Amino acid sequence: MEAFKKLAYFFDVPIEYLVSDNEKAPLTLLVQNEELLNAFMEVERMNAEDQKIVLELIKAFIAKRNFDKGM
Image (cartoon, rainbow, N blue to C red):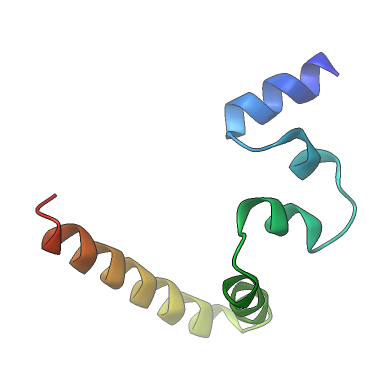
């Protein structure tokens, strides 16, 4: 149990994330919005090139949001 606690602390995730055998359960602990969770699951099924495009779009949106906030 101590090892799980240390790993969870190191990765900044709940212990349940480390020990769950349910494919969707670990993500539901981290992503509360079901629509967003389903979108991430769909992206996970895409090929590597499409995943890269989606990731770049997300990064661009985050960068714009941070810029707009003056960060």
